[in-house]
Image 1 (cartoon, one colour):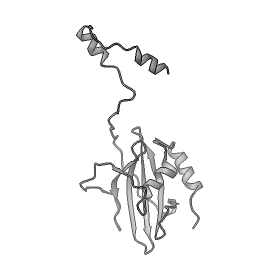
Image 2 (image 1 turned 30 degrees about the vertical axis):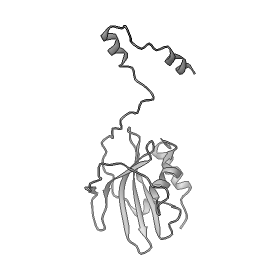
Image 3 (image 1 turned 135 degrees about the horizontal axis):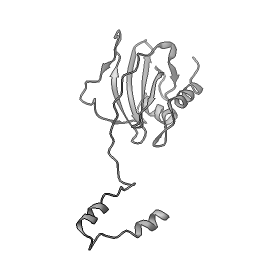
Image 4 (image 1 turned 90 degrees about the vertical axis):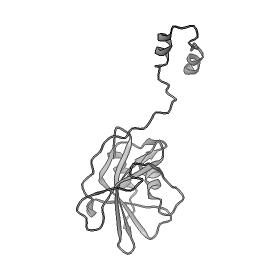
Length: 175
């Protein structure tokens, strides 16, 4: 209410000297969209099977999903970064290092770990710098599951990495 009352008191700047009008325009609008600026990051150590925390994705019986807790970080840019390991029933694996923005419900892949590789391979695809909206209704929608169940609370990060890891462990399926 106070903000609305104060907003009603603002003058239009009519009749003000030009320098006062410019100073007036320097005020920050708290409701204005702020452009996202991603912080730099370093790739984590490669995941170890004994460290992985499994999680369940609805509608996915043919894949197992897990997160490396040692890779989970929350940057000053509010991006949750993590390594996910997806294993098929036949033993095939996809390992990716990803980032997630809770505020925009978007993700991007930074790097992959191909079979037999001893180091991360940076994502060199056309979409490497693009944030993609997470799908909630697609099959194997693991990013959306991680976002809604563990990493995000609405449009904010669910907490520090320690809390996220604690939550993942608390709800990890037993195999």
